[in-house]
Amino acid sequence: MTAGIVTAADAPDAADPITAAPPVIPDKTFNLKDFGAVGDYKAMDTHAFVDAVAAVEKAGGGHLVVPEGIYKTLPFKLTSHMDLHLDPGAIIKAPDNFAEYGIPDPNLPATQPSTGLRPRGGGRGAPLISGNGCTDVAITGSGTIDGSGQNFWIWSDKSARRYPPGRTILARPDLLSMRDVQRLHIDGITLTNSPHSHLEPHGSDILIENIRVVAPSDSPNTDAMDPGGQRIVIRNCEIDSGDDNVAIQSGTHDVLIEDLTCLHGHGISIGSGTRTGVSHVIVRRCTFDGTDNGLRIKSFRGNGGEVHDIVYSDITMKNVRRPFDINMRYNGNANVVSDVGPRDPDPNDERQASAIPKFHDIHVTNLTVTRSPIAGRIVGIPESMPYDVTFTNVKFQAVRGFYVEDARDITFTNAQMDAAAGDPVVTRNASITWNGTPKNGAGDPMPFYWGD
Image (cartoon, rainbow, N blue to C red; front, side, top):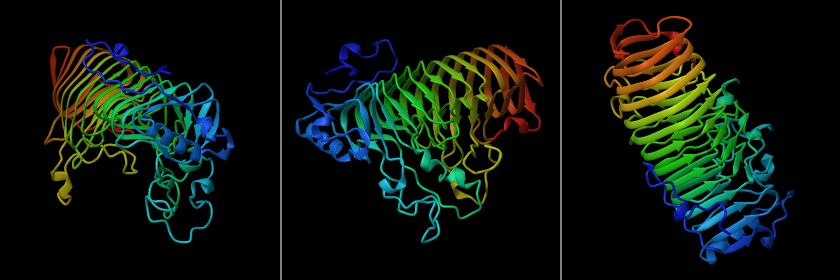
């Protein structure tokens, strides 16, 4: 069985600037039912997954087929040269109660006080499916992997902010994590309701295509994808989640993201960790509808590095709260109203004197924005202003225009701005060129651009 597996002939066109080498999967087939799986979501099928993966490994690789059914399982690991193929109607689903996880029920009185971002039973649990250090892995088909995250979300650190101090916090497991992997292909499946991040693919030659990621818009920290590494291609996906639609990790380069539909979520992001840099990222032909952010690059003193050679093109957005955002003072995890931290470094914090963000060579072409509260913002830091940021053939319809602070060499060419209030562009300690006209500003900051 080779359906859903990329072959050399099917690989992205050589003219594409970034491609990912496909995995090599032996032509052997295994059926999960042959290893004792029941698939009724009553019996626990973890043993069947573990035994089946062991058989695939012993045979030197192959395709493990998961037939129609709902397979309840605790975490299990994949192996090299393996395709996990989910037939139509196949659902791999985590338990929907804490008892089967072996986690003390947080609704019951604790025997000892909570100790911060760790559960009473220990550290963050293993991902439902993982494959660290593997080569040549595929996860294909039209089935679903369901993290049953609903019980975990209310016990997150974000939820705890709404309660008095001392509330129990559970460190939530991820859904699918592949780290230090070489040649990974994920195609066609649906990922849903992760307790934490849905997909963490880290390594080289990673292709993710034709998948759906679905979680409630208010589910905390449920990033759809957190890719890291090199030669990463993400295309033809639909994402509707509670946090970043895509969050590119520090140290990543050579990424192509194309033809994504982003609904709820925090946008296609780079950062906030950028200490080891991010470069050569292409995002094109993507649509955003109702997303919290659109295109976002974020970091802060003490966790920053060089972000450059970033190209966005042919992007359409409507009802996006913040269409474009560069924020070098990111403060989004501080549980305060604004996600923008202090303009000047804290002299008493030694960490802020190192790992300073450096953003440049960022280019946006053919962007259309309608019905947004603001057109966008660029917020730098005085000692390391973002520079060489260009917008070409862009149209904005927004309540407020574009805000630029502590930045230089920002260029808008053939830009149209339909702003209901205020000037098309507002600057503070910034130099920009708007359709050929230089603009420099030293005004006051604009609080309505800070948001939450």
